[in-house]
Image (cartoon, rainbow, N blue to C red; front, side, top):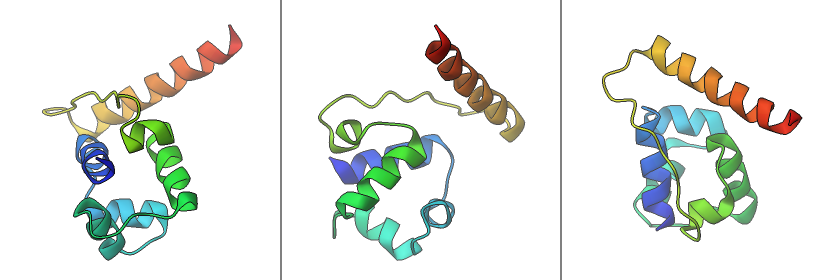
Length: 96
């Protein structure tokens, strides 16, 4: 479940394993091992992965549903706008 969730979150965001590895400061091989269910990330890394993707650790572990939005067919600029909109909505929710 964890391996599938990491892969799904990565692919929905159009990130390669190399790009995710750079974002998490690990090797591409770590990402590959996690996604192929060869090894599990440490608890500390699990938290880091969750923060990177903006989800809970429960969502990563499959305890709660991960909500994703398909951005297929959108340009990188459009995807960046959606990311900003989501961040703005999160901030608005905090001020209410």
